[in-house]
Amino acid sequence: MTTRVDGPADKLVGLTLLEEWKVIDRIRRNTVRSGEPRTSCYRAENSKGDQAFVKAFDFWYEDVAGDPMSLERMVREFNHEHNVHQMCKDKRLARVTRIYNAGKVLVDGYAVHFLICEYAPKSLGEALPPGDDSVPAWSRFDALRRVAAGIVQLHGADIAHQDIKPSNAVAYSCGNVKVTDLGSSSCRLLPPAPHDDFVLCGQPNYAPYELLYDHVGSWMQRRIGCDMFLMGNLAYTSFAGHSITNVVMGGIREELRHTSRTADFQLALPYLIEVHNEYVPLFLKETVPAEVLEDFTRLILSMCHPDPSQRGAVLNGRNAAVQYSLQRCVTLFDLMSRRCRLRLPNVA
Image (cartoon, rainbow, N blue to C red; front, side, top):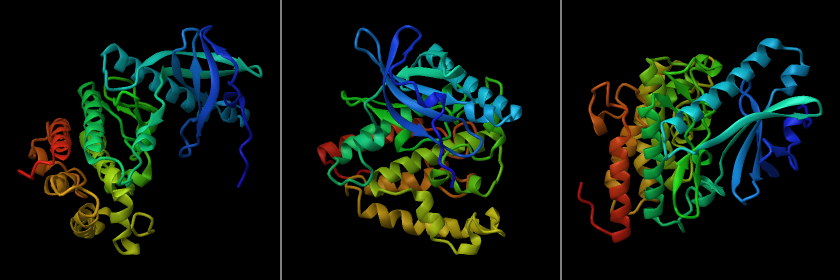
């Protein structure tokens, strides 16, 4: 395995961006799937003491490799994420982290492009560690309500997030939670990003099963239906401590899994449904309060149904316009939070 050498995007600490934001320290480096931009992330401050999140895009490796097509793709990915963030800002989507500015800075004679966005001290996974039984259930449901509300706002702007997971929501000291990281998003109102060519745009460990098998449906099913599954998976993971994708996929025979050379989604689907219906209630029974167990289990079984044509049907019906809507989830997570806090009986 080749050791990755620091490039210009890894050297922003101490620089002042746009004559306003001084880069204080590096937060993390994102080295996601092949074909996606490498990024380095930082915390910055201005003279007023305000903090910001900086995402610097690393195009240097593609440039020195002499691959103009790959470099062009990286630039288009940066422009897409910038444009989606700007659209969210213009539409005042208050439950999505806000972009402040974008620009480029010369480092070692090379132009590093960056986004400057709203900063939060912790990801949702850090603030409310998945599976940690010391975290009150009501606070988990309240956080899930806020994330779902953010996804509802994105869907209202024709944006599919496609990478909802504990690290892509951020928590504030006041208790607020927002959706962040739109790098894998798709938007029907903008020119298609290069990753729109992929069936799966986000993290495989949290993905809906059909996308792992390269099963392609309509834009609504493949993108918005994906978000419903991911939101359900986030809710499941919050309590169970592990992804529903890994649990269910691990429960079927190896030759049926997406990693098998002969894998076929339609052949695997009946077995995925069987394991889904058996394992999900089993794991939730151990971690979810009795006051909401029945309702929450039914919700997750619907949101994460292995068959995308049935996903959300129990929750919203089969009307194509609303089947994958998360609006009702916002209400249900709110009710579950209140019920856990007040310890009200299950009234399904």
